[in-house]
Structure formats: C-alpha cells, structure tokens
Length: 137
Image (cartoon, one colour):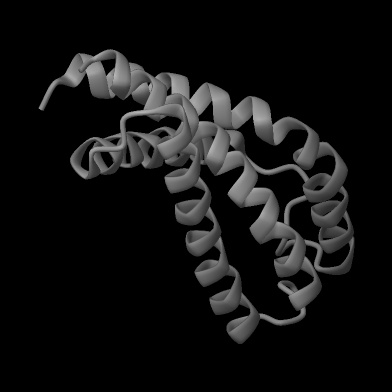
C-alpha cells in the first residue's frame, strides 16, 4: 500500500468533506441537535465533543481512501459517484437502525433530510479522493 497516496487522499478527502458539510451543519444539524438537547437533556448534547468526531472522521476517510483505491476509483467523477452512494447507503442504514431503536430521537423526517445531505458531502469528499488517486497513476 502506498501510504503517501492514501495519506494525501485521506487529508484532502477529509478537508473537502468538512468544507462541504459546513452549511448543512449550520442550517440543519445544529438546530436539530439543539432541539433534541432541550427535549432530552443529559442524553443529547447540543454541541458535540469534536475530538471523537474528528478522530472518527479521519479514520473513516482513511478507510474510504483504501476502499476507493482497491476499487480502482481514479477520477473526480468516479469518486463523486462512489462517495455519494457510499455516504447515502451508510447513513440510510444507520438512520434506519436508530429509527428502529430510538424513534423519539431519530425520526423519518430527520432521515429524509440527512441521507441526501450525507450523499452530497460524501460525493465532495469522494471526488477529492478520486482526484488524488488519479494523480498517483
């Protein structure tokens, strides 16, 4: 495994996904979690602890870069398409599991908005990964 290639793809994918998530975070996620924190104090935090979230994001982006490399995803277009379906499927699955277990916190209305927003941010991150992987060909 070429750690330089995967490392650069991880960093650029993470930055691209973070930047593309800024507006959805402010417009959708922050108000949603603030309302949930008021409804379920002590259970839902309005402002998350970002250290575990960032560590998880970097590790997941590292895994995505490896998956994309093994799949032969080596262009902006292929990265965006692969990122979109990967993000949508990951968060559809997660949201549906949460709807099944804790429906007062995770609702169908939330899932209907979360999945397309996740697909978008994963498409942007995937495009960045695809671009980097293409450069190393």
